[in-house]
Length: 255
Image (cartoon, rainbow, N blue to C red; front, side, top):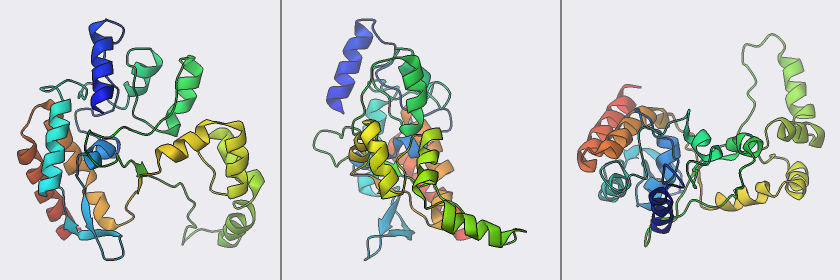
């Protein structure tokens, strides 16, 4: 990450870029996109159970490790080197990259269509870690289907889910309209053969964290995002993360 920042700083100094990198923060923060940097700095949202699953009863946003990670974010922020900015949000992060205003974009497969359309030369790689830090661990999400418990055509819907969705034609069709790695191995192999980004994204996510599928996760997004935006803007990381952890715990207790 330090090398990335140095390269971006030089390009900004040479007036070849306006931003060191584009990672959406916005005025309310973005816990999803900042998570890989937070984890590389040693931070986490929850502890883990003996089985290695997220433990919703153990909020670690204000642990010593997380506070240290918060300082890393501060150092990248507006009162630090300026790599993270609240002015970069979900509306302009990708356009900054496709418009040639920044050399680095932290995003996912959903950005590829806009990048391809822009014609800018690009490559896909893992998010770099801090020197001496842990690997950057982006969230890994999975799209899925749900059968509505009160649907009027549950038999038909069940047939669709069990007989159509798992087929190669359907999975490849999903990929055709939204180029993310298909769940079905056959379709994923075919997609990877035609699209070099598929194995690159798989490699980039090798150190990723499966997005916690626990109710407590719902209480994290807003408080942590607010803390992140405050830290990027120059607020003391310990103060911001301690307040976020308190809000998260209260939210969990009242949910």
